[in-house]
Image (cartoon, rainbow, N blue to C red; front, side):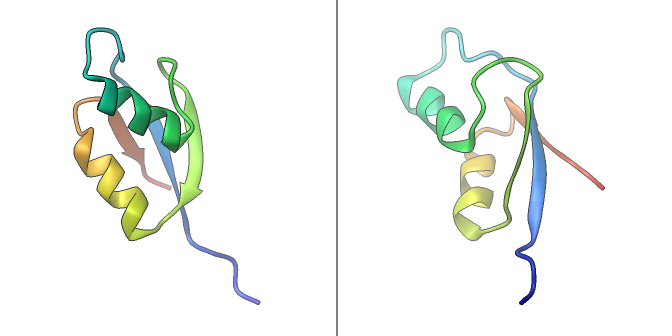
Amino acid sequence: MAKAKTIKIRQIGSPIRRPEAQKKILIGLGLGKMHREVEVADTPETRGAIAKLPHMVEVIEG
């Protein structure tokens, strides 16, 4: 049984004064506070959510 591929993301932007939709995407990714890091499954849905917030999250390599 192979382990699912994951990616690590970090929040680098504040959700203050952002549209409600962007705040909900952050919460859906498991973020919400500055500099928090989470490891999530590398799926097209996750990549799409990250693409909607390029100014607020970064993908951590390695």
